[in-house]
Image 1 (cartoon, rainbow, N blue to C red):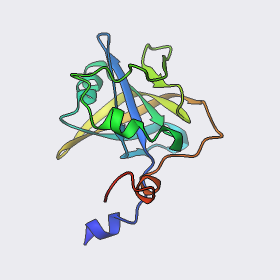
Image 2 (image 1 turned 180 degrees about the horizontal axis):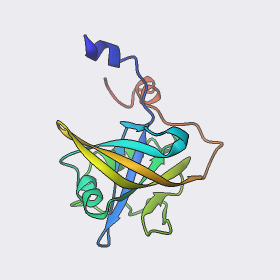
Image 3 (image 1 turned 30 degrees about the vertical axis):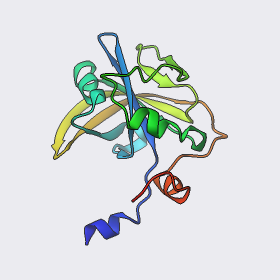
Length: 157
């Protein structure tokens, strides 16, 4: 029954970008939520087998990039390939924040985070992150959501 109820939820689509020891990666994540008052914490769930999670564990920093509808092609580029065998930043507009962590320069904006705590969540790990900064890049763009992708026939489920 819970699966049916959860189908009614909509999820914004994000890319989690990070760097550790000079290695960068980014993935796609929909399980991101504000978890502290006044924008102090975000909670991010990352799939345990992804390369991104290895780098986040190592560096303890990440950027949560809020994707726009015009970035729908990033689902395949960042979500269906491994950063272990492909440079996901090749031909991808990005820049580095003051910590040297990549962010997607065509995203609506990004939230800079430092890992505060981690919890096991089955096939994911949940990172409770302290927000250290927020940058709005393109407020005129429309947010990419799971519901919009489904309505466009770009994803199933």
